[in-house]
Every structure is written in structure tokens, then in C-alpha cells.
Image (cartoon, rainbow, N blue to C red):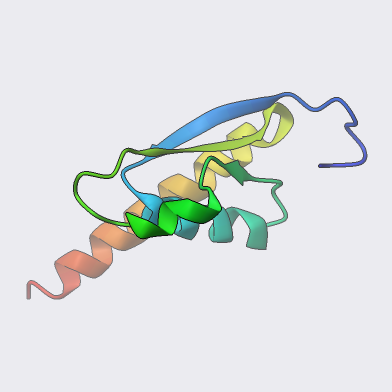
Length: 88
């Protein structure tokens, strides 16, 4: 946890469709210095990415939520533009 905020309150900022999406978001946020937690467990790899797998929550400290949401929005926009680039 962030040592400058010892009693940091985590807030859910995103519900990923599967473990793969949650992991991608977790890594992107971590690279930007955001403390991030997910509800992915060691055993969830058995069903990782399968259509019947339940979603995963992405949580960050409340004071980093706005920054984290902006990063997720940027990821989403980059993903959309990468997908449409192949359509031409």
C-alpha cells in the first residue's frame, strides 16, 4: 500500500470481463505508479478468459482513482483505434 496514505481506502474503478482484461489494466496502472488491487486469485487461472468466467474488480486508492480512470480511458481509446486501423 502507499506509505504516504497508511489507511488508504480502496475504491472499485472498473469491472473487467475476465482475468486477462483485469491483468492488462492492473499492469498498465502499475506502470504509471498507481497502487492497484484485483480480486484475481491464484486459482482463477483455471478459468482465465473463458466466456463463463465471472468478472473481476479493479481497485485503487481513492486518491488515485481519477488518474487511474484516465489511464483506463486512454487504453480503451487506443484499443478502439487499433481495431479500426485494421478495417481499412
